Amino acid sequence: MTISETITNPQNPVESHRETEDDTPLESLRERPYNVRDFWYPVVFLQDFLPDRPYGFSIYDESYVLFVNSAGELECLRDRCPHRSAKLSDGKLIDGKIECLYHGWQFGKGGECLHIPQLSEGGTIPKAACARSFPVAVRQGLVWIWLGNPQAANAEEISTLEVLETPGVVSSDYLVDLPYDRTYLIENVIDPAHVNISHDHSEPGVKKEDAQPLEMEILERSGRGIFTRYRGMRNPNDRWKYLDFVAQNLVHYRLSEGIPHFIFGLGLYSLPLGKGRCRLFVRRYSNAQNWQLKYKPRWMEHLRQSQVLEEDLPQIVGQQEEVSRSGESLKSLYLPLKTSDALVVEYRKWLDEFGETLPFYEGYETSRDLSCASETVSLDRFSRHTQNCSSCSQTYHNLEMLKRGAIAVSIILAAVAIVLDDPRAEVAIVLVALASVAAATLIQKLKTHFERSYQRF
Image 1 (cartoon, rainbow, N blue to C red):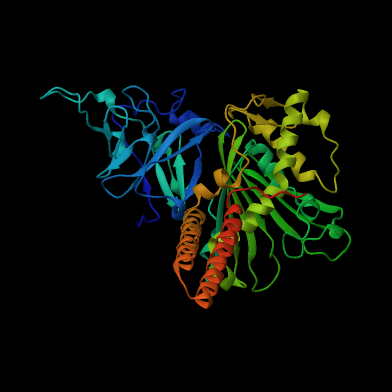
Image 2: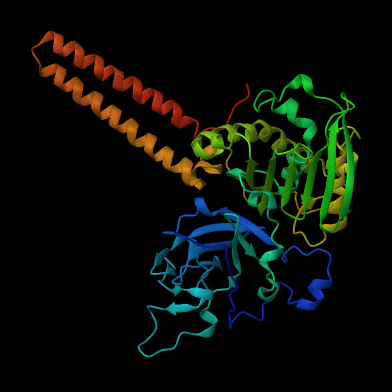
């Protein structure tokens, strides 16, 4: 499938009056400093999107479905059949149309209803049978969805990483679903102070003994985000590292600023799937050792990144549960240090100021409706990552086939050894059969790395 860096901006004649959830005029929306619907949301890496089936996902607990229409364009619809509210993502694709599995209604470009099997001969498809559609854009290999007024959808506003356009820069992409709210995810990834403790020796150069006080500066703070820099305080000549939070879904580490001819950094996008659920997109980029990013199997890098994320997972899940259980504000619960927590506190205060339109969030002094998650995300690695990653799911499938093949070979060889009369041949065959059993055991052990989360102890 080849889908260019493009945008589809559907104009649904039936539902065009539903510009926003509250039908606020576009002019008024532009005057707002922050509105939860007037944003582009990252959904999936294009390389992990399978064009032969509907792709279901959620944003703030509302369900959507992505598919390729008859024009070869990505199409996003509300994941709800207008007939009887069945999920369209459970259906199938037929010639660029998505068919509801319940009664066979079919929908195409712009959500237009194109076929109703139960309609009488000569009958007209009702205008209200159209499904609501949303603008879609592809930028830098990421698929984005716009939830607001379609007329206001401007793909130039997507928070891309300009550095990825630099010649010689190569990136590695990773996607994972996490069982906690996006505000806790962002708090975690803008917290450089925890890295040496939580990820001791999991990343190159990361060591527990290097944990130290940090000098942190807020360079800019506004409705568009928080832009900061930090450095260690042990060495007075330590280089500044730059860390940006770009509202509302990008955290960008620019780790090579000031180093001539060297580019290295980390872009972390997030998607609020629902209460207590979020999705993280990691883009690690560099212009050095780019042969590793180019040629190292993607699944091998993903196993490493999964471990790093899972080293924090129990702490963040427990943190969210404890805050929810207490019923108190973070201001009353946290004991922040200026030399480690300044950015975290600044982000939570930013939510106090700009989180008014968020359905649920946890600010420093204010919060909304995070007491009970509507749905949980499994803690196992297979559910959170492997099944959503094209590289890891294919590798997992291949390993299963290899394991079955090795077991079949061992059984056949054992049967052959039984019927042979040549003792030396029997010994050789038995040894090969045992080797096949050992191979199947090793393959199964590797498979578990795609299934189970990392356990520190």
